[in-house]
Every structure is written in structure tokens, then in C-alpha cells.
Image 1 (cartoon, rainbow, N blue to C red):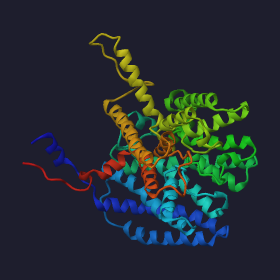
Image 2 (cartoon, helix red, strand yellow):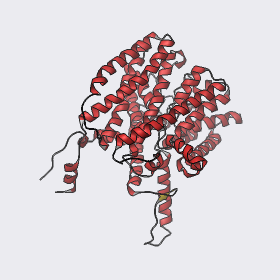
Image 3 (cartoon, rainbow, N blue to C red):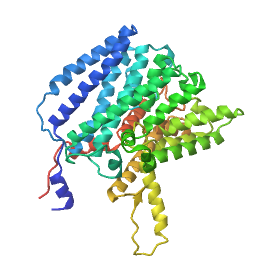
Image 4 (cartoon, one colour):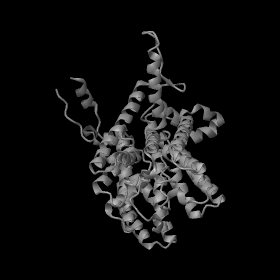
Length: 488
């Protein structure tokens, strides 16, 4: 029997009852979360949006309540976790699109808006945002907030599938049986929720204290911490006055781009945790470099205006938040390329940010350094691969390289349809990278008039970027669903 036959014989497909029960339970959580924008629509007198929201929640309840009671094994397999991850974001967006249809959006635009919300991207085909109702605006920001929470929770699930350097840095306290995915995930998720909620309340309170209007403070705090970037203004942060409030709101995105478990460890270990977290240090260094390069590349006589725009746009791209103070389409090619690189790298593992993640970028840089150092050593010398004192295992190096290659391959494949459609190459690349990295900055390509097929490409990009590609590869893998025959 060949190695492939052995692999085929040992492969365990997903159990449909396990998938159904857990997806239904996630659906029930989404129902509870969606009651909040329903109440906001009610209090603001937005009866149409409230009615559509209630209708969607009613249908979802009728489906999820009975399915959540299905008898299924208590254990959960690795492939089942990843399939649940892939499906939960899509199904959540699908149900979330219904109220947007009621608000007057077409089916594809409503789905686009919902996917952009739950994936914390922030791209939008809606024009005239300031003409929308409070219920509509709050629902978008709230979707990004609980989408960001979902990202953080599923990052915890990854913790128990991968015992590499990322897992060690995401751990918050002791773990029980390493195969007790659900038990460990619940324990860590409660801690994550506490950190996430505390940061949210803190940001809202600070914005209110400094004079930001209550509705603006709440919506920008929700979309900022989730690194989503939906704004209640057509001009995004540029419409916020005074300028100091723009920096304050942008700071919420920086907080969201830091690994949420980092805050827990910071409280436990004190200020010394800052020196032992390479991603946190990497975020500061990368953001500083990007800001400096943007300042140099941006045109304009007003030095203070250039500095403001460089800081906010640089932080927005690096944290994948998507707030903006200038039109991306008006920037020169050098500035666009800088922002593209920044979005590609993104934020920290275990944060709400997108991109390939700073940790994987550091692993690749360390591999390059290792290769260069190796050329100066004797042939039989042993050089252990480490990152900031942690040993780099071969499988996590392979995984980092694979994710980067898949990310870049997806960008390339998604870029081609836009080139065929006649868009400027750099603007098209910017838009695709923004979607894949769940950033939301736009070169004015995403709009209501964008071809349906190209909207679909960006929808897929946002979903793939949010679940880090591997979950959808597992979803598409035939052996995930059926046990294939074995040769004898």
C-alpha cells in the first residue's frame, strides 16, 4: 500500500451532525448579537430596517433552534473546526444582507456590504452614506464589531490546532488536554470577550470625554477596534472635527491590530511583556517606516497636513483598519505601492487585523537572515532557527510560506479580471490587496456601478482573507466531505 493509500485510508471526513449543531449554535449567538441593531433601529424610528431585521432573525431562529438540539458527538476534529470557520462568516453575512435589501440595496450590493461588515473589511458600494438611517449605519459598525470578535475567537481555535510559535504567544494561561478543543476554546474565548469588551467601553468613553458626538463615538469605536473602518461620513475620518479626534479614532484601530491575548498577558506580566512580543515591536517599527515613506512621497506644501495624512493613512493601512483622510486615487504611484505593501503585511496574529500577519513576515525575514548567515558557516555547523528566543519548527515555517504564497496567488488571480475590465493596473492591484487583507481602503473602484462579476471577486477575496485561505481550501478538499476508496 502506497503512502497516498495510507493517507486515504486514515482520512476522516467531517461529520454532518457536528457541523450542523455547531453552526446552528453560532447562528443563535448571531441572533442575540443582532438584537442590538434591531433595538437601535426601533429607538431611532427606522421601522423598515427594524422590520427586515426582525424577519431575518425570525427565519434564522426557526432554522437554528431545532438544529442546535441535534444529537452529535461532543468531540470535534480539526477539519470540522476549519469548515465551521469558513461557513460561519459566509452564512452570517448571508443573513445580515436581508436588512440591507430592505434599506434599498440590490441583492449583490447588500451581500457585499454584509460580507464587508462581518469580515471587518470596510469596502462599500453604497454612495451617500450620510443620507442613510441611524439603524443602517449602526448595523454596519456593529457587524464589524462582532465580526472582529469572531475573528479573535477563531484565532483561539487555531491555537489548539497548531502548537507553534503563534500558539504559544496566543495562549492565555494554562491549557487542559491539548485535544479538548472546545473546552480550551471556551475558556480562552471568555477571556477574549472580556478584553474586547473592556477596550470597546474604554474607547467609547475616551471619545465621549473629548467631545465626540455620542453616535459618532460609538460607531467609530466599534468599527475602529474591529479594524473594520466603516464610517458614518462619506469622507471617512476627514469629516471628523477637530483633527485631534481623527488621531484618537485611528488609535482604536491600532489597539485592534495588536493581539488581544497580548493585553491579557500585559496585565499578568506587566510592562516587561512589551519587550518580549516581537509582533508588537514589529507593528511599531513597520508603522513608523510606512509613515515616514508616505510623508516623503506625498505631495503638498502644508507640512502639517502631509504629516497628518501620512500618520493616519499609514496606520490605517498597517492595521488594516481602512479609515481615510485622503482619496487614495489622488495619491501618486509611490504612495500607493507603500500602502499596498503595508496592507499585505497587516497586523498581529490573534488580533482583528488582516494581512499575512506580522509574525509570518518576521519568520520570512528570519529565514532570509538564516540563509545569509549559513553561507559563512562550515558545512557541518548547526544553526538553530529561532525568532526572538522561540524555536521555529519546520512545519510552522512551511505553513507561513504556504499562506504567503496562497495569499499572493489569490491576489494575482483576482487582479486579472480587473485588468481585463480595463482598470488601471496599480489601482486594480490596490483594490484587490485591500479586499484580501480585509483593509477597506479604496482606489475608487468599488462602487455601485462596479460589474457584478467583479463585486463577486471582491466578496470572495474578503472571505478568503478573513479565514486566512486555509479554511476554504479544507472546505473545498474532497476528503473533507467523503471517504474516498482505498486501492488494495
